[in-house]
Amino acid sequence: MLRFIRLVFFLWLTLSLVAFFGCKEEEDSALIPSYLSIDEITLDVSPGQGTAAEQITDVWVYANQQFIGAFEMPVKVPLLLEGETDIRLMAGIKLNGISSTRAYYPFFKPILQKVNLVRDSVYAFGKVSVQYRDNLKFAWMEDFEGVAPTFDTTSKSTVALQRTSDPALLFMHPGELNEYSGYVYLPADSSVFEAISTEKYEFPETGVEVFLEMNYSSDNECAVGVKYLAQGLIVQRPLLYLKPSPEWNKIYVNLTVPKFDTPSATDFQIFIGAKTDQGDADGYLLIDNLKLIHINRAK
Image 1 (cartoon, rainbow, N blue to C red):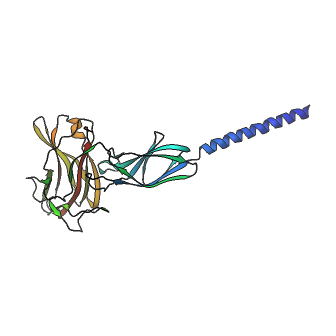
Image 2: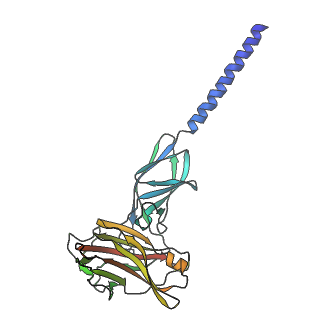
């Protein structure tokens, strides 16, 4: 009888251990991730959308409609998922050029792809591209290629905004023909530069995003902002101060705020200003590919 009891106990212990380790193995395997790798996101443009130059630094990753996280590229993202999965990638930027205010750019389409994930394996997106959304209005673009300027100095400016074709100064993007950029020479001893868009624009209603895209290079701080009419008064409002950048840089300036806090504002113009203080060395400012973009409610 004792022998029988021992045999039963042994069988029970064996089955319990098998069940325990079997469950543990299943649990352990569920913790093995699959991976997505994204190296770079570039921009494809259509006619009428200007340069394809971009400053996409991050990727926002969603899997099966769940937000996974925002990552600086290149990146390998771990996912505790397997099998067929809906992936959504959003191209991320430094909002207003500030590293601490990263966001996905609302004017780029998401990258949507159904992928088959395998645990402990990598699905490689590699280098992918995005396009602008279809419902956008490119209200103003200035690339300095045209003869008639749409951006010019004001009466406050003591220096001129020139078009330069100097190869050492030109903004260049692979595959694009660019013959001119905007150039401002700032001599020492209190030079003042201010230029403004020659046309006035209506921003959409409150809550609709408005952005200015721009390539620039400068050894001087410069201000970017808007001038508008509000309740019969002319308001000139700096929104961002750009730090010096010896190399060409791309900036995405959020212009949404003035319409948000002043819904009645009309007749918007874009301005850029810079100056050198007494005794400072000579300075310069280069600008190109200005794009004023917002949602087109007509579409």
